[in-house]
Image (cartoon, rainbow, N blue to C red; front, side, top):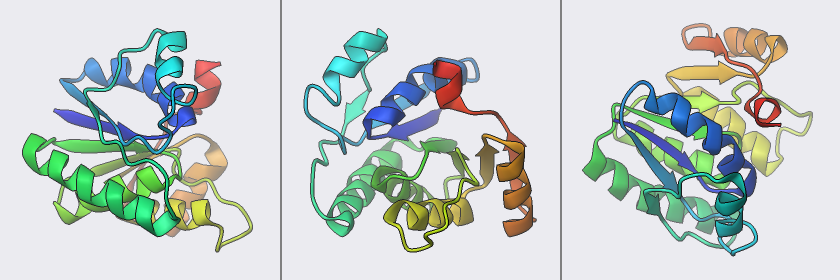
Length: 172
């Protein structure tokens, strides 16, 4: 089984195409952390995309970066401990991405990071901290561009890096 974990509106959109693609390789457990949780940012989007709802909804909700990440970490750890997926797929640079990746890494479950290698010039920006930490933990770095691929090969020479393309662009 592969666990596909996400929690924000843009990630729901990307998961809507990743989930069926991953399902061609085995059972997928779709976990929405609930980082974006109100009807307009979550349930309505599933309806508009005609996407299957998640198998689990963790109801993390709002909070500071630390509070939100901690809730994602503890709630996703419980799910991953019980489900025992062979791989956990995370998307992007959110608190959900970091929390789930950290839970998986602590459980010694391989992490695949979709949109790996993206960078901005502000190394202390919350999303940038999340990106760099997840890239460091991931066993598989799925990059959206040749620049991101080169960056990951330089930053993580021993990691498995695959240029998969831009999921958001593919959805559009």
